[in-house]
Image (cartoon, rainbow, N blue to C red; front, side, top):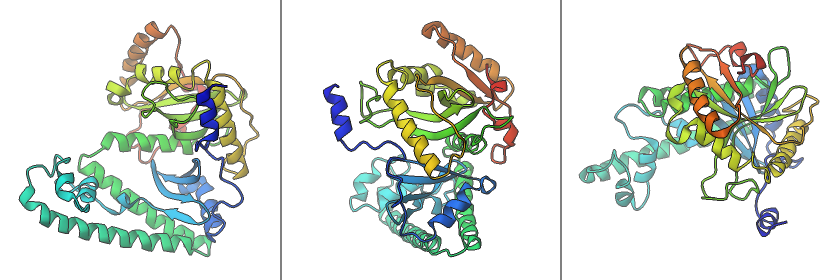
Length: 365
């Protein structure tokens, strides 16, 4: 065992699901009601495990974070609906800092507005105070729910809050592509929880951030590790797939190119000397998901190198042809055939059809 591997093992690195045990959230009385509601797929929520905490996702964003024995957190961003020309959340946070004049220099929107900064700071502090009040109120309500109906009522308010936030982002022209891709990713996880006649994969995780302390991390630039969009297990074989999601061809640019994603795979979980440690971690994750009844299929992971694949959610009919050309260039360099699932075009990705988002071999090239 190398010195680096030993440091990883005795360090602070925690595989996903490792600390989700019988003590987890035991002091939050409404936790089991919340989990029952979240695991009902008709409610549109997706439960994912992290190292020491659990996220419940809605439409691609973390609706609530649960940790420890009773800690419950809702992202403050969702309580601020931005609009075109208004302050964004990052600028509000800068203006709330004691050294706000210096922080403002880091913002394009605040640059050159020195004389306005005191008044803008006053406005930002008021906004943040209101956000904190709303945040505290909804968390208190969630923790104190006693019935299924109360949980339903509170969570529906939280969902509406997130929808309003997303609409504000899109209407203001901010992060529209990211919001779209995260929403597609959410529904891919939600609609692929069971093996059936339409789905050949179960999604085990989304947004898998490779830890800088993991044995399978990239050696160069260790502080900048890739994320895996989707980790899935194949029906019948137990083969693990690591999948990169592309939402239309506009998402295949620069650092997000097909070649960059494949190179990251080869340097991390696809490396011949590293993939075994990755599979170890995914086995820990699957075991935790079975214990918490998030996964209820009798499935076992095949201990072999994970396969790499792309998932292209087409925005227009020409995307498939354009992406195939992109792949052909990559395959000339990598000398390998990379499977890709081409999911049908949908006009409304906020209200998708389950059958159009199945990870099925019939969609695979």
